[in-house]
Length: 461
Image 1 (cartoon, rainbow, N blue to C red):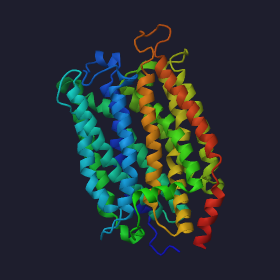
Image 2 (cartoon, one colour; image 1 turned 60 degrees about the vertical axis):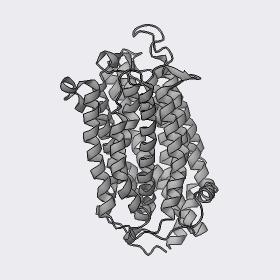
Image 3 (tube, helix red, strand yellow; image 1 turned 45 degrees about the vertical axis):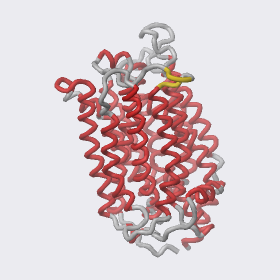
Image 4 (cartoon, helix red, strand yellow; image 1 turned 60 degrees about the horizontal axis):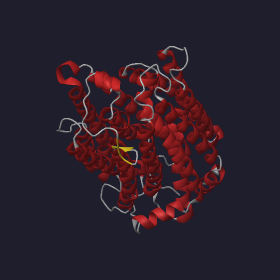
């Protein structure tokens, strides 16, 4: 039986503010790193300069593709290490909060450094520094996010609070990502005086400071000892990781999650290109489109919350996979119809809002369910490792997605606008994303949700 205090709605919202912070930093890297360092011809005309080698370096891989892919692999490998250290930590503040306090400020600083390379031109020195800063970024993100996510099943100790918490952190995740999409809009105010690169750097510095403050709020306000089991686990990180993957329900979830995240990462990385290259709008339109998607998605949050409690998470998540697949296919045909660009962008944003609402809320709750059931079955509390194992797997998928996107995007990249085959590479990335998302939905239908919930309910009775 759970003898810890149940977190109030106020505490759940305070916790969610941390996600507002780290999703802002994550969104900056996800949405603008490739855009900044592998600029399109239009952005070069707008004043952007080159900082790292362009084109392919080795076996069809680009410099930025190598950096982002290796960074994600490094991130994935460090996840179980940090999770093991967090699960086994003996500290007066608990097992998670000390990590969150330590990592927040370096997390923000290194985000700014990523966009502040010192050399001009296609410099190998910049390539080396960018590689180093990206590795540090992913290490800091793991050090904050893995312990942070491990608190989700602890604070959401019942099905109701778990779904509510997943809803709250999904809201702040959307707002954090929306803030990240504001980069070119804010940078526009400084472009005349600071230039293209300088305006981006100042903007990212401002947003990073905001993000750090948000991440520190739950780390200093929430008393982990009131809500969470702070008993350290024993054993190595590797043995704990292997024990986690022995859970069959978790393996099913992870396979579907990997396929989803490869597809989603292709789509997210390509979003600014879809808007500027396929639809033909300026980069500043990225935020309005995301804002429309976010607003429409938020309208879906209450129904998702209600239906998840009534019909379960599995049916909704499976539906979202299929719907996202359709959205990606629609995106692939952007610019090929007589529909005005702004209208087409709005159509894609509205379509994406429905699965974004579902998949923004429920997967985290599913992991919490599985980890809670595993704790009941095994008697071992390793929530941190479950979230780390999930991120370990899907970040490997994201690495593959970054390599895939930066390479596929080069197909027909030199064909001028208006000619046959223009932007074929970008269209292919959206089609691949659609196929992978469909496959992820089919796999998730094998998840045995009722069995997992029965284990949890028997323990709570």
